[in-house]
Image (cartoon, rainbow, N blue to C red; front, side, top):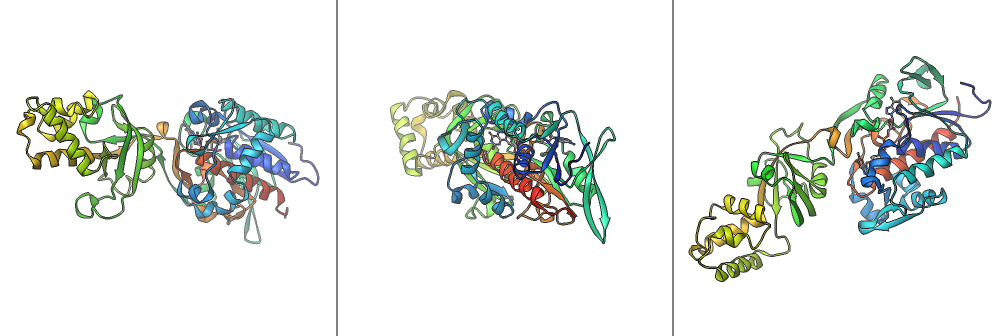
Length: 431
Ligand SMILES: Cc1cc2nc3c(=O)[nH]c(=O)nc-3n(C[C@H](O)[C@H](O)[C@H](O)COP(=O)(O)OP(=O)(O)OC[C@H]3O[C@@H](n4cnc5c(N)ncnc54)[C@H](O)[C@@H]3O)c2cc1C
């Protein structure tokens, strides 16, 4: 590859969100940038984000923003404050993709087409002569040692081609949805250079459960319910301790267990490697009603149909299939409504407010929105995204041990870290 004299040459590995933004920022600083992408096109994952509409960022205020970052928020301070959601919205609009803000401050392209986000980024890169080579998987990062300091000198592709570079930005993503090209290659490349990697696990992912009744309710979606994830071993003994997660919203029953927005978020706080015994969840089916209000409601239904079976009474409170399961769980389905005493009504109220579900694991990377774990952030300088032990090596995006809730936060992490890495890689002195 021809190198231009006097210009820094930067190689970006991966044309995902972080890599494309890193390339934009580096090219804006005047660097000569080449992106090497393993697959046949850029932004394969961007294309499927937000159900094809790309929830590209979140316009909430900064205080709220940080409550949605799950792993290593402090590491992200410089990156996010340096290029925040407002700047990202401005950037993408300036590049021909107007955006709109929807419920929950979620930001989407006005066109509702994720491909327009990638088009805007590619347009910016074209204007700055950034070269993108597709079908070009990188195998390793090349370094040299001088005076005890390790420095990046280039990369080697899987076909054996070696390309020199003044700086390399590793933006290979995590392991989720491997069909988009994110297969964890970056972990291997970094580990070869002695960088520690936190075990990658699927996150924002559906959860498998022990209860068979969940599978029987396959396809049933619940709205306005509350899900509480208890700390392991806590379910009985330490009920008053703050739960790992508590959320209100929607969930879904599947053939293996549970899914839907509430469950995906809860999965961010589960670590089955450290807790193979699993996690206890409590599902509140009527969170809008207090204990007293729900008991009164049950009593009203009983008074309206004293001669009916409790299974029929419960059906007035829930969709039929769920009512059948609640009736079976409570053990009173066959009882006549009028035979219920105060204590039994109290027990039914307790069950409806706290249906126990035991989480046994998560589904795999193929169904995970993001990967938790990745390159140890301690190995990188948060003010530059440069590796502390290998000069000229930068990392950005999901390859790092950073992840967040749904709502545009994961892409904002990719934009912010990509932007910082690109700028710093372009500005650093060539030694
Ligand atoms: C179904 C789904 C929906 C999502 N929806 C949203 C959403 O709406 N909002 C949101 O904020 N987040 C969403 N996310 C998460 C978000 O897409 C990711 O966090 C983000 O795309 C990560 O960007 P990245 O650039 O770090 O990695 P990636 O997007 O994974 O990009 C990595 C790139 O590197 C390439 N690559 C890998 N190895 C090599 C190699 N050896 N050589 C060369 N190239 C290589 C890959 O082919 C890929 O192009 C969603 C994720 C999924 C799976």
